[in-house]
Length: 247
Image (cartoon, rainbow, N blue to C red; front, side, top):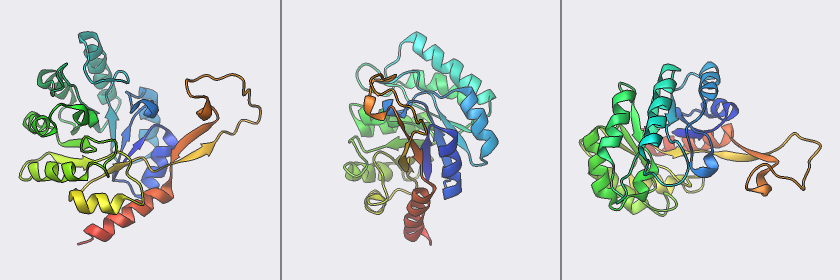
């Protein structure tokens, strides 16, 4: 199980629950962007499981201009030097195809670290053709919901993607809306051997004084809450996984 985290506490809880690795992001409300070096360093000081780092300069689409690519290259190099164990990124063309040249430029910096192509593939024009490109580029994993809003909805596509990767090194990792109550169904249908989730619960702010007529973010309903990975939920999800793949 790979757990998506955006805080030190979530990373600690993920490891305590038995996660195999964490995917470190910032701005999970936007689908994840590049985290800070400080966050990576503190997390690395607190946990021993691998930390794969998201490289994404902004939210929104996955078609980046030259300057945005330069930002991602600089971030990748700096985070690699800071101790990242692996990386997660993806780039598309304006026509919704995998931008092989742009991806290769990032892969060249990332190696020999393992690299995952993220859910940009779900926004591609042809998910199977895009998967072929990802395989040919040598990505170690591809994170996908099967092109739907959730992995549960995309189970049939995920199953076909798993079949497409038989005999190659690229591993399909289902992700997107995976929860305790749907994990077994997703694993059985997709036949995937890894999965990705955040296992987060809402935590109320410790603030006693709350200025409720003013907000700092674009979503006032989350001003005084955070979402933190639950050790208990990670453990429960791994129990489900182990019950299916114990042998």
